[in-house]
Image 1 (spheres, rainbow, N blue to C red):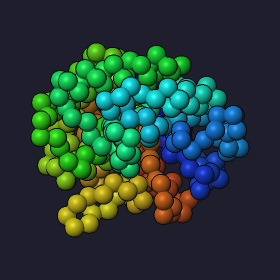
Image 2: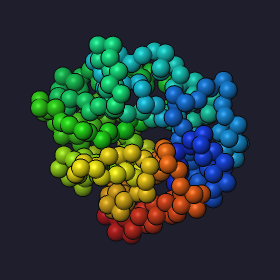
Image 3: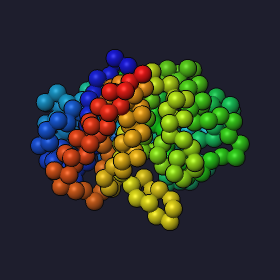
Image 4: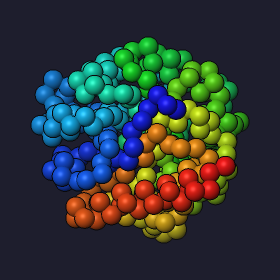
Length: 274
């Protein structure tokens, strides 16, 4: 994991660009790749790059978990973003987003079968070949489980890492979502995941409605999510931890406070590292 040294960061959004520029203690940022044009980067991102902050392009539409090979145009865009931003890596989701020409509108979980693993292994290798920097894949918040699943999420990711060497972006808020909605233990998931391939971590807040947890990225991070982050930090020292906030933006002070809560959770976990 010495390959990446990112620190504590925040997702860059155009609505809070000045906030991110002014905020102390931001070590890196992540930008949604579909929201930028490599040939005409926002001035704010150029300012941050000029200060030496790493900027990670984060894709949401590649659909690397689908049955079809990754779209060459989408991969070319991710590669161009990485080059324009001089990024240390690119991240995407281990999900499928379309089938039969229909867009799902969600990051859907992949079937955790041997057959799917073979297809996704090939897709990941194609993506790695097309990118100028390492690729990290994010675990998604599952709203359902496939009845034919043969492997747990951790087992599936571990074998994918073994086959491809792909890095991992672990979203602890997604682990919490799966724990609440599907009864899948977040701690058990951490114990099964190949944390030696960890590139960085996502942390975010959400809302409960009707007994279902919605990972909205529009609220303060629940203590339960920070506790999962501490559990992760007790097992490994993450190269980076990033706060996602996508709408209903709070004050600058509130966002800075969220970053400090993240740092405190990291310290709690590190204090009891195994």
